[in-house]
Image (tube, rainbow, N blue to C red; front, side, top):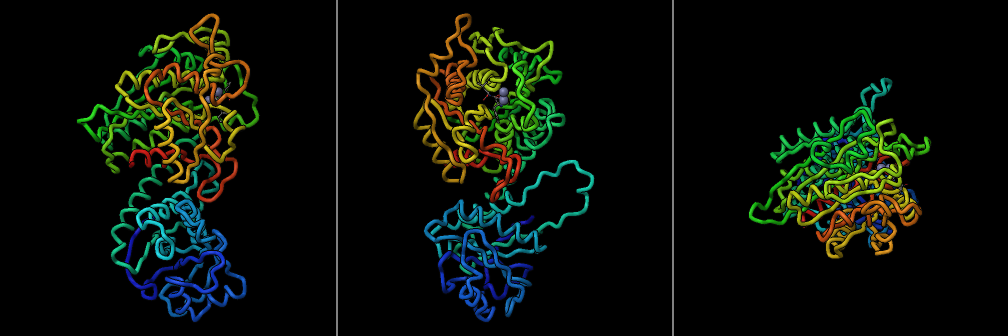
Length: 495
Ligand code: BES
Ligand code: ZN
Ligand code: ZN
């Protein structure tokens, strides 16, 4: 789908569908909606009076008789209550409108940037949110089913129109940004939705190499066993798929020593290992590399976005499988940092591979660490699929991550990192154990394990176990992979 920005009057513009908005409770249309109403001979006003159009959020009424307008159909998009209409509502509304356009086979869709004419949203941010919602809302994993081969209708063009020429620059900038961010997020979704037999560690590493080459990023790929990453290898050695650790580096501020590392858990399939998971829903564990996918998605657009920051993406990749070669509960292994780990549960594998990835990032000079992982089922118990858990050792960094998430519609909620959780990981035979064995407060316990490897460096840990993969889609989030937290990371790097 192409995105275009045009200025001009609504009455002169042509296309298959013109979309205007209406806030809930509004009895008489204003602005662009009033212009459309007039050209339609008062049709919108009449339908409001009849109660057919009520402005309820994301409700769309299609009017098939365009009156004096040069478009084939007009849609009135409900925007909900005006005082509740924010960028996230704009994203959801855009997804609703583009899905409707797809359904009624409108090839060229013209829309107002809702909320920045009659509302008080910044035009650039509103256009960005609109385009994000539309591109994310149209996402569908292609899959491999043969009977899905019939050509699907695709909206060809989304035109953002404003009669005020002075806003066009801002709208264009926002639209361009929204497009690249949403495409990176959709790319991350694709990586996660891909079955684990096709998205192996080696294949992921090849894709990362390609992305690094295209974007001029410094690229490193390591064999974790040879590199002394014994904690990562302890997870990998039960599998027939060789593990990898990849790093991609973007230097937007070469004179500065500051370097932010984004570290993504890349378990391409988590069976639990010898501590085998129950078979129900085990197929969803192909999504256990959602952190890795998000980091790669972000790295892929930095050369377009050009933030003045140095960013290191670190992605540890492996399967977690049971076999005669697998690590067993009770085994003691070492790590890149030199700490010995008693593996009390082989299903707590994410923290093992992240431990070595964190140590590696520190060796590469990272001054700030943010890791992202589908780390614990306990995170889903606590927050469901509504919010990502954030835990860390640096409140200023945590606050920035939470604010970035809130600014872009990806909710974050802080959980604690009390000393009690660290105490509970003391082992009688090693420097620490990988689980407390109590099953209590697992998101915080997992973070307490990582904290040992983080040391004093500023750090935030994001547990996306609940938010990365949905059983049921909503708004611009599809069933399956969501692409969380690509937008949050971009927001953070932009600020
Ligand atoms: N990948 C899982 C966590 C997970 C579960 C993500 C469900 C998404 C949906 C992780 O590796 C895991 O198995 N964690 C264990 C840790 C426990 C053994 C301390 C868990 O949460 O049960
Ligand atoms: Zn696991
Ligand atoms: Zn896992």
